[in-house]
Length: 373
Image (cartoon, rainbow, N blue to C red; front, top):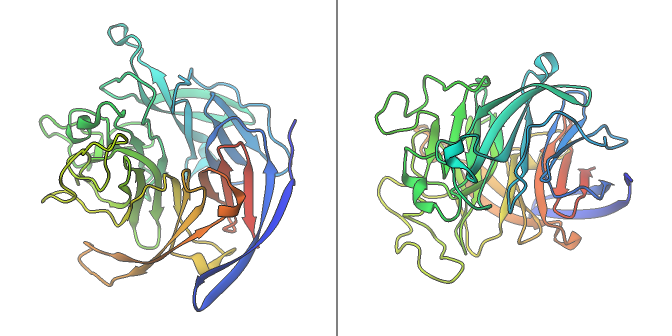
């Protein structure tokens, strides 16, 4: 049974000494099954993924039973139905994009799996014209580190994450493997001609950047023209990065973390030719999604990063300031960080904005929560 308007709580935040604001939280839905991603449609509806392979629609009043027509999803470990994103021109073309874990369709790769990207037309609560746009060239075993977050760029290409598969971390430095990479495609699944490794030997042309462990958040800053990402480190070394094509973000050759056992992964936290994070979170906070905020609801947040977290069970604000660097090497700097919603005791999985800048959160406990004035 759908349950909504269950909880309203009032919070006051101090972002810095000069700024104070407050908002309400409203829990609209509880009982979702491991929700992972959501996207806002032009009419204000939210499309929500559940990792067990269900896709739901929240129309502001009720939650659909399910949206039918999805391809078969491998629901294993950290895998399943992952992110969902409406095409920027969804109002006209009805294309919905989603990532998910699935087994290989090739007999010689039986029982191997990987992160896939597909799209389909969404009409009412039915998907049609389903097209698988991407499956990784190297298929892995196990149920860990799928990544999967999707973001569109202004040219209608899209970028999404593929995790390192946990036991395959060395693949993050291998440009013939898609593991541990951010992938960029045209909206029809073809490879953009200006991708950094197009027509280069021993380089997969779909790769946009590499040296990633398990990317969880992607957000494009429309004002600054910057793509931000956050990702899980091991024990320590969670990161926020500014993503640029062709760059190497270091994993596992450099890291600020260690293995969960305490074993040293790398003696180095920096090497020439490998990018340093904009933010290093050690100890790990387990970031799960992010947005660069721009909206009317909370103008004090404009231009700053909001990161949801799992381990720390909070909404982490990273305040940014422009540096004035005209070279583009260091366009922003971190001013401060603040922690919110800790008292709710929730593992926050995804964050989404509506057209007014109201903030929606998904929790691992199965809730959809709205932050508003």
